Length: 534
Ligand code: GLN
Image (cartoon, rainbow, N blue to C red; front, side):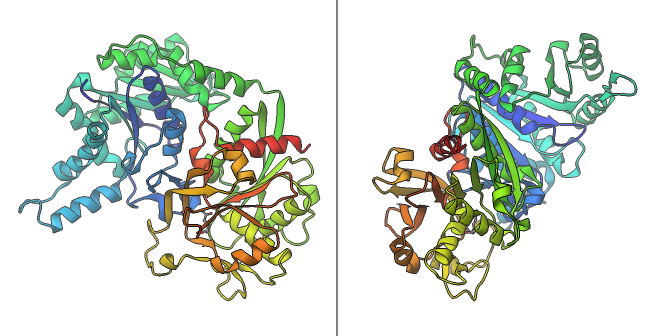
């Protein structure tokens, strides 16, 4: 089968959930046994989001092969139940970087280098590369931003050209738009949708399918009106109403036959999807019998997107434990000496300290760790969370006054967390961390080994600092167990203590590999232990 290319664009406003819609389309097509991959285009000039503040961008998702990516890649992996890679996320920065480098090497043979065709050719080649390298049947490419944005134009132009190059039977345009309900008029308004489709058509793209975000179901008349004004068949006006759980979205699309329409437009002959497992997951997610409350103690708590994968991983683990997840957000910047943590955590079953950069909020995190360790509350530290565990242990159990990470205090007498020697030489900040999958060996009889039930695992990393090898022995002598290490034994990947129901930290980020149909084992066991802590 020739590779098919689907483009998902957005109109009216941002944050309509284009990423989840794209992921849902991917899952539906995959459920017919097709080989599907998903790609995100980010029209900003940064080469990747790795250097952006979480307040700007939300979480930075890390792929297996160590690319720092948009958080939509997380949705893609979770819905597809598959790992993606560097090429699945492209940015304006990468496109221009590569075109300008080619120009410097003289590869354009004296030509004037222009947006059309050179930038658009580069974009198209990166879309097609995904299809051809892995023998993929369908590539679904989501174009970030909203139609009408200046920086999105070259990408929309490239998408337009793709139909010219590959024909109607191999390309499909899906547009996600908003149909607001205006209370005063007690009516849905279709005008914003009409305008955004007109904008698309001005670029030369006639959408084949419209996904209409609305608070409640549109009537047939409203759908007919949208169909008429936007020149889209009425059965291709799909309603995307608000749902309780994002994992329901593919099922909602399926009930409206979106999948069948995509297949018939692309001339793919497939009969029945296999959505049984997914349906079961959604059913379980919607009717749990227990409740588990987890405190997430970080510093970007006002911006929930900063902890997207952690939230999802907790959710998957809660569903697997038949529990409804409640999250209590704790801003560690506000946890001073005077805060009574027993009140803060009175109704909380488990405590999680996530990753982070910079010293704001770190002392609060260290106080939280101390509380969880002493009061035997189930505790899970991720990346900076593990580093805080080590600092807390060094200060309060090993008596190393002033112990710290050299990231926060370069004059500390005990730099228990320090830069790796190879990180010390690096000057640039972009793409220079320890990134992506690394193997880890688990000590027999440890909690980590019980959790993963095997000796060797691989998980994803994103950090510069490590447990300082000089302090491993003194920490161990006082009871801190390093239960996961790099295969050469030099890097400490997991720490835990005995005589505690659940107290564990990982230098890696297990949240990136958790999927609804395959929750990450540490999250699963953390929730299980938390449920026992009532
Ligand atoms: N700032 C720490 C480091 O770079 C932790 C990073 C993180 O939590 N992702 O090592």
